[in-house]
Length: 554
Image (cartoon, rainbow, N blue to C red; front, side, top):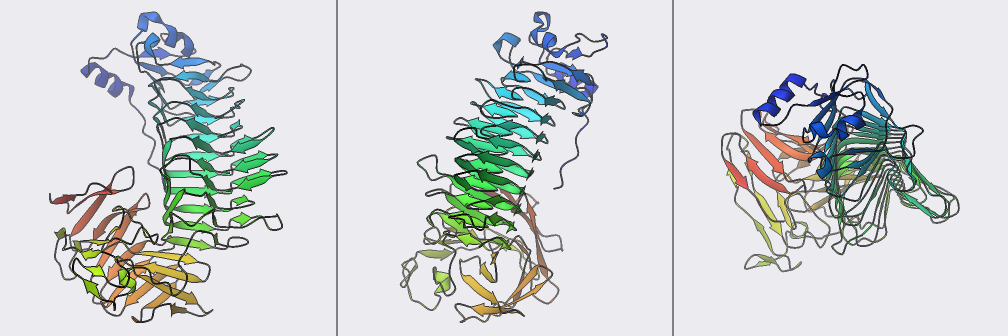
């Protein structure tokens, strides 16, 4: 994973900015007695500096615990940060104490510091709205939930941080239970554990429940574990409400139950609200995870799954264990499940179970039945589907015209075709490739499913053969030839469309950011830029020259 470089914050720049905003100067802490305070706790409690909202610590080891950061008693939100923004050099160690390192964090930020050795790392208190930025939280053990971070309030943001070797019964690194949001970006979760002593344990790295919506981007979740006598779930993540994973790698996480059920080696997703919350995956790798059921991913009844790209490979639903299935993905029901793009293979004992992946020969939409009749709006007389191809919203021209156009079909959601434009909408770059074992499904921008099977030497067209599509493969790159348009469509291993060409030297290149299409360029100066809300819905398209189209709704 490529992360942004860690910024080295300039103390002078920070203080100048504060002065320009009319804020007080910072309070300083160091061990050698040359600062305002020699301990962080005394700086936080100093009534002479109440309201000064930045506390800067010089590098060193601070053996402290039970810190309260923020709140009305301290004059409101605060920032606790290291002078160097290097968490390896500034450490708060609570070893030997009987409390968390930070027992109460309220509307505040911790930056560039290591927090370790506590009965829990950080506890978020009423008021929420806090941030952990470039911190290391390690070797904390909670008696209940959230070994590294426990939050019953929110929202909570984690940026460019590392959680490692923490332990709890639920959420070895993070546990959150609130009607709020958890946002995690550019971070690492490694070797955290959820251990149940008598009943259930869940979320080796992260466990959320209730109405917590979660967005995770550019993050590695590695080697976390859940163990319990009776039931264990979510070796990497236990998700509750809407969960969006953009370029997240879940590798070598595991779930064990000594005499019961273990589910979701990488991710365990249940329905915890009445709305059927979504697990959406855009890019990333889910590999080497292990459970009895759902080695890579386990998705419950009425919980929706949208897999828009990425790889699910080398996961294991343990052979020989009663009820083991879904080595790659296990769905307790097929309702609301959409596996649109990705590479799903080499999972044991099987690839996908119960998720409603289209079988060879399935015809589902108007684009699958182009020879059927239409009436009025238009409505397909065979499928009963209302459909419409719209004129381009933006057309930049060119030798192979670069444009953005929408397509609507009322049956997409019913048959499990979803995209970032919202329910039943797609656009002309919405193509995807799904590899499951020896079968490939390609879905084009109008929802037609083009199916191929591997015969040991080449990919053969299967299902509908009214259009003689051809597919070739070279080192994990797949090229589809559409004989009608004479266009070549190239896909990568995660199943994303990466280029369109006409065989005459003209090419449209597609670029992805956090697993979602962000730009299309023709190499001649014409560019389309795509923007998204945190919910992953497409919100705008612009040409970089001032022209843009705004999209709203779902």
